[in-house]
Image (cartoon, rainbow, N blue to C red; front, side, top):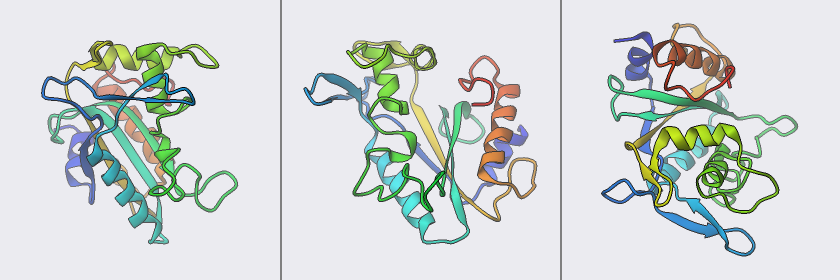
Amino acid sequence: MSDLHSWLTRFPEVRWVPLFDTDDTLVVRTHLRGPARDRRILTRAPSFDTAMIDVIETGLQDETWTGLLYLMGLGDTAQAFTPLYIGKTERRGKTHAVSRNIANIRRNPDKFARWRYGLDYHLGDLSHALFGFSAYREPTKKYQRWAAALFTTFDPPVLKAPVTMLLLPWYEHSRGPSGFLTSVASAEKEVIALAGALHPDALLNVDGR
């Protein structure tokens, strides 16, 4: 077992949840958004929403909680997991004590820790790459790569395999795969480096991002 997979096995409080709301044939359910309800958007799994809200609300009650690390990938066990994308959400924002990405997440899910449905966030941009709806800019190459990696067909949006999200709550006492105390930002870089070494052809992070 790799250092990364061993670390995921031992990590406390990690949540394993599906990212997408799918049917039995891995077709992702969609819904319409936008002022004219003309933007077709991939729908998050209800269990993902529940887990994300719980991790953040629980974390904000603890002064030592500094954010969360998330891994999108394939496989539902640590031993079988192939990471595709690694990111983070920090407790503090650039100008606010609580980042706007997570503030009031239950009542104000607009940003949803970077997984909101609008453009310039993961699911909005991935949906834009899949369906090509009209917007203020063209779909980005980053999310076109995501679309090609995750889906066998775009319309209907059929996944190649179930997509799992790992949510790792991060505290001042949390340790990265190396075993050292580290910040969530440093842990993100460490995990990206390990995932890139293990699965260079699968990882969707580019230049450590």
